[in-house]
Length: 211
Image 1 (spheres, rainbow, N blue to C red):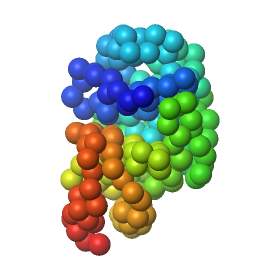
Image 2: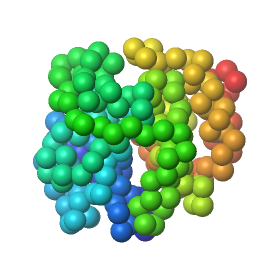
Image 3: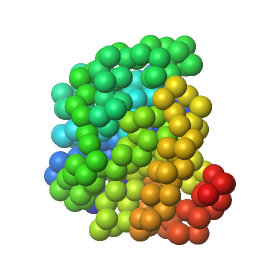
Image 4: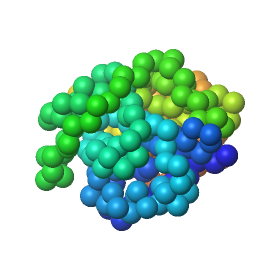
């Protein structure tokens, strides 16, 4: 089973990933400004809809579409326990104002370090990776070496830390932690994915961060 990228026409939407399996998992939702396209594409590749939606963090470009997707699919939403309250009760930490928008509240359930999400084809462990936001999480499948990294790690870079709730020191610690994993497939929150990730790529990101 594969991880499918769900397209959106909004250029600043996050990447949206569908992990296929008996219990499909949708990761992130985009802003919701093109929910029609997103919902249609999900139905095309997953007629039954996702069993759950996971938000890698609370920012509007990743979580703004959650309300529409929950209305369509009726599935539960999960997020890291430090960011889930912002999704339940949006505040300035969602950065929606930067997009000239407001985020609609969604009843997000808490995820914590070590929780396991099983799609039936892949088992992802929740990693708490603060830095971009206080409650940023990554999902790691040890068997395949797959990391869904949100805005913590990009192909050739890492997430900014100057938004409310961000911390450069925390980001450095999270990147060092990720560098110790066997990452072979990278699915970041923005930009290109990589199904042949190497330790050298991670080392270059650490060098950029000054580690």
